[in-house]
Image (tube, rainbow over all chains, first blue to last red; front, side, top):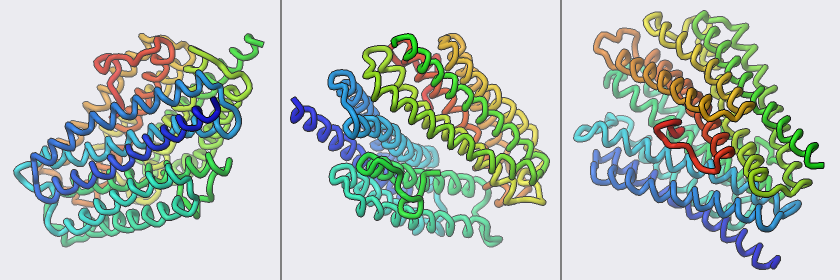
Length: 222
Length: 222
């Protein structure tokens, strides 16, 4: 009985990990759609989003059933509660990829982004995939060192986001206000995506160690 | 024993409700700080934020202890799981008020907002208070009709947010890109605040009825 239970718990972590990977892949495709003004790709991200929503609902239900049937205690209880909280973060990661795809669709056949900032978004898209994969690894391995690495990736995302703002605020910006609004929102979506990946890692580490990691190691998602 | 348990559960809902009220009040003060370029008020919102964070941590721990000690089943279990999820939403509402206050502080002694959009933000601030109070009422009364009212308030916030964008996108916008970036982010913060209040109501209704309310009644927080 205990063994079956722990298998189910592992399965749940696997599921959550897969969802993180899918969210990262969705962000990558949304980024491509954005950079290439590719409507088909944007539509694909938008229709694929249902899959992440359905997986979220299943994962939440699986966690609930584990709580209801097994009445776990101590560390096991903490693990399931964390899983339920993680579902909300991963769900949000998927929604942010959806937002990016929707902006690409709204601006089609035009490019939403001025060429000047393409490099920033290509890099932020690459980081989003890494963050999704790292969160998946942390969920499966529960390795605090891997969780700390997510902090580094989040720092890199924050740096890009900050630089992006200096480009926007520069008096030389000549792409108008509409493009600035899009770039502002898009930058925010990538930054939040990273924050949620960090939060997933924080929750896993809390689950393993029973206390929240130092903000220096893994910054809080704010 | 059952009675003490239900008292604790009610207490938890009360706590979450108070947090919603505090988040709404924080958003109101942050809005005043923004409209009046009031540094003292902005600083107050920023330092008061710790209180919401501490209350979040306490509420989450209280919910966890209820799960651990009482091993609740069925509806009671669902209520506690919802509470844990609601903590994350309310925590986020507080963080969004903090973001607004930080922009007011960053731009001080200047006004972050061009006078032209003051009216929008005054109204969005007013709605935020209402949303915080409505979420509190829903938590305490668990009344589905009150939950549906939050949907209306969220619709009003969305309308304001949309109008704000038409002002920004207008060729007549003459306040430059930096102000447009601030207005874009600020608008997003109020919109997300409303979304989280809606999500709180959705979770309470799910808790009461066992199924998610129709998106037409209470729109999903996306």
